[in-house]
Length: 281
Ligand SMILES: Nc1ncnc2c1ncn2[C@@H]1O[C@H](COP(=O)(O)OP(=O)(O)O)[C@@H](O)[C@H]1O
Ligand SMILES: [Mg+2]
Image (tube, rainbow, N blue to C red; front, top):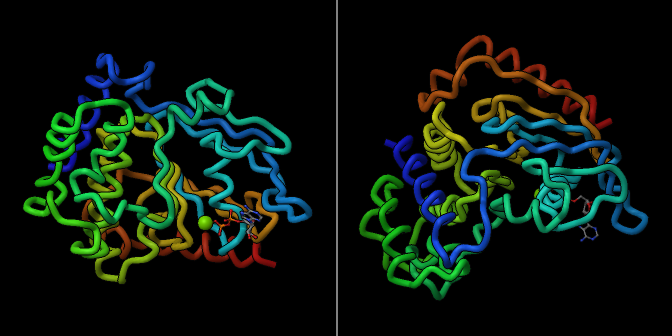
């Protein structure tokens, strides 16, 4: 069911490319991301020491690290919202910041839905910004509401939705941007444990084997990272450097309970927690 969400979202992205209202080409298929020797400071404060990362198209990379270590900064560097002090970043082979920004959809830590807009208008925001007429934008975003468990809430304002629903609207808005790279910054951090587990299973399905999006998923939750990713990068405390890279075998499964209780998962979790502890020294 959610695979279809992805496929039809990709279709929407392809359609966007041909629409006169949408600026320039936005590769609908996942783009590679390359981060090479990147460092960043805020004045005297060294946030990122040196990070190297190669992400293949369609790969999901989990990024875990202690609070304040530079995870959000790393996403901003990838998206071209900040220039690195050293090193280089490219997205889809493009190194220029504006070219990178065009290829990334950034879902910030807080959902940042506009409180005066309905759920469907919030989800359609990227289309509206791209110049798609309101009725068309609403119709395109509205097509996904049922699959996201949001049917009937199209006209609701954000304050009338649960935390999980707001996150799904924010995620849909991110997808509707039709960009090949998704930068997700602690998407579930504000949710209670049960909703969070549900949302993780939902995202695992949305990022199933047919997903073409390249994803950088920042979280401070080791289990979330291991469950959702193909590979997990463990960052040290500030200034951030990579202290472990963990490969996760096998496909993502929406059966979260089965995935997180396997022996292999427990071993990877032990390793990640050990690396985190060592990196925090
Ligand atoms: N705009 C800024 N100006 C100054 N310091 C900042 C700014 N943004 C982040 N920092 C600092 O840089 C460090 C890394 O921040 P951030 O990337 O947000 O960490 P994380 O997302 O891992 O919690 C923190 O110590 C934070 O206080
Ligand atoms: Mg952050």
